[in-house]
Amino acid sequence: MKKINQCIVAVCFLGTLFSCNDQLDLQPLDRLTTDSFYKTRADFDGAVFASYSSIQDLWGTSTETLGETGEFWKISVVITDDVAADAIQSDQISRDIDALQVRAADVPYAAAYTQIYEGIYRANLVIDRLDGENELTAEDKTVIAAEAKFLRAWFHFQALKLYGTPPLAMGIIQGINDQALPNATQDELYTAILADFTEAAAGLPDAWDSANSGRATSWAAKSFIGKVNVWKEDWPAAITSLADVVDSGPYMLMPNYEDNFNFTTENNAESIFEIQFGGPFADDNIWVFDDTHSEDFKASQGIARGNYWDAGGNGVPGGKNGWWAPTQDLVDAFEPGDTRLSSMVYQQGDTYYTVDAGGQIEVPYDNTWSSTGFTSKKYRGPENTVSANSSSNGAAEFNNERWFRFAELKLLYAEALIEGGGDLGIAEQQINDIRNRAGLDNLAAGTDLLTAMRQEKRVELALEPHRWFDITRWGIGPQIFGANWNDRLNVFPFPLSEIERSNGLLTQNPGY
Image 1 (cartoon, rainbow, N blue to C red):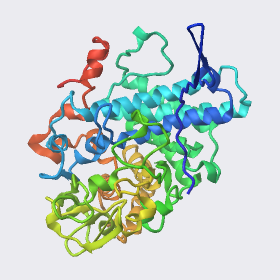
Image 2: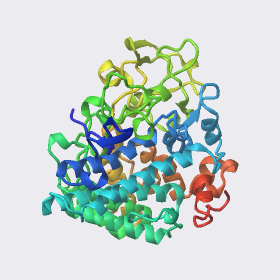
Image 3: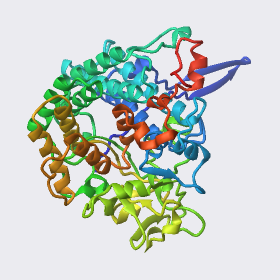
Image 4: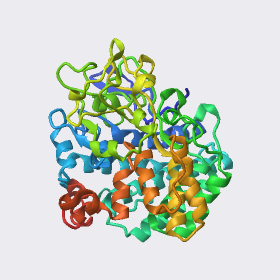
């Protein structure tokens, strides 16, 4: 499948030295600068793709910069009640986060902040350069501006969910001493995010051709408008936007739940927005994530999903790390007969699949391989643990990360209808559609729909990066975590390094 090739501007100098009368004459034969680069449609496409690549970096592993090891999984999935950090195999920060020990100086919060604002900067750079001298048509400018604003909105929305009142970066700051930005209010953030998504919806195509599969579309922007309004609790606006997507959009539930996570069925009819991972490449490894590393950039080197999530430890097939595992509490959340459970976790009696440099491994699952007795199967299983989806050493894979699925949108629509006093019959139908695909009956008469929606969202989207943000926005932290809960956890801390770098302009969140 054709993937988006992520690009970054490189500056190369090829010099020829001439020695004459003891003089040194340096003559650059090739020079690519920002002034000469932003000219053609291909140039601008490449610059937009660079912003996309910052999303990939959220899951990156790097021996440079901050020493990232899949940090976004830790603060979006491992921290929830669905996952436990393995007591023996995982790193210390994973175990701390699992215990709700959150510190401003820890790597995950700085890693996410860095990638988010790098992506915003790259989107802003595209928007800024559109006004320069270039070869773009008016239509080109409309589409490129819309796509850059989609990305700028997407990154700001993630920052809002993570940090509450992060800075709003709506342009390129030229002065070296003016780079720090203050906290924005949530009203300011929502206004800017919705304005960008609205312009994106107006300027993006409804669909791209197969050579551009994975790029944001007008329907994706409309879907995010609905989702942002759910976060904002503007229920009438959310209902209007989400109803439009459900009733008139191009999306549908895939008949087979597992097709949403197989590398052979990427960018399918249920996918609203997913993170593209390219490959394979001959020298792929997970320890050099090119976009944040000094190695020559050549697009993504894949995602280390299996390396962290597959079973690990002495004697475990595949040689993976086994850092994180599904909890008994998550397994117990599935109703009897729910077909999603078998595609979600490995448990005793299952056939286990992993992959290494020699290819696929198929063995009986041993529940002693995990401190919880379970291992994640989502995105893995027999379909994905194959050489075609893996780097040559078996450590990285190239299966996309599904970020926003139509199933989630239907549940957001149900939530907006329930909370906003809308048609409860339509809300119930959205929930039942999800249940029916999982082999479950319709909700029983008289079922509390808000409780049912929240339950369905947990099991449908388990091990995807949504549960934590639902816990915080629904205010159910004390219910889930009991005495371990602290209200400061409703937002994460700004990185200590950013607070210090701003000289007090950026204010730390309360409790940190």
